[in-house]
Length: 286
Image (cartoon, rainbow, N blue to C red; front, side, top):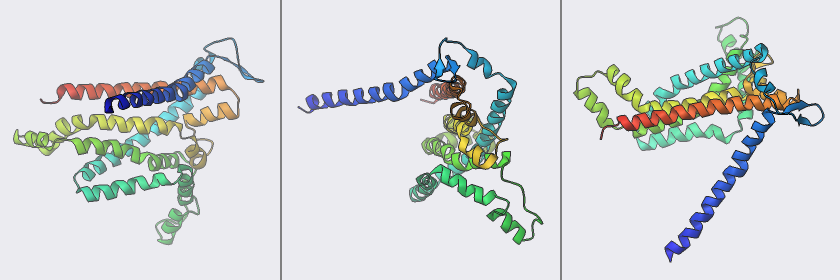
């Protein structure tokens, strides 16, 4: 009787999941792909014939410079998130369960507040008359306010602030699953701490690193509101280009092509993550 009841429930769940994926994931992406190959039309936004002009436009020096600048800021953001997140996750995995739970809770608490609100709060800290400048000037460390807002550095600070938890959580997961006997075996075989870290710890935690990079790098290129609020008009991300093409320039084919560029980049990172997991599984001791 239990098996008879279980089968329809399993079928219903599968139909619901696949229906959700087809309707809200596959179909919108197919529409974006189709839009990227259509012709810009001032009246209807999209029209025939099909062409690849929007993809050629991606290599225009003007947009290519924005893409490279965006990739640079996203790369620097990912580097600092990894630089902070890796030792934090390592230290977190070595604490007792109660302390781990408390720190993970504190790490997740900011998600309860909208990221747009938190970005505006950060703007108040970095402004010319903001808290940081007032404290530094009050302490006599500086004589005049530092120009932090509307700079590339401000955008990177905002991105690191928003995306750091997305680097820490996957790293904590792999550190928590790391088999301590492998590290002990490395020490027993004469390897020092640095050698163990380079040849054992890093390879075993590489899937978590790639997962964190994947969760930080691509979103960092798309968080257009961070660049709008903290960077001004001269420090744009790919997300700003996409938003401007859809809302201001009304060039939907080019905006869709830029979106496909980010989707392809995500697919490449997913493939690299899958390869790292497969390689780790093949090299894992039996």
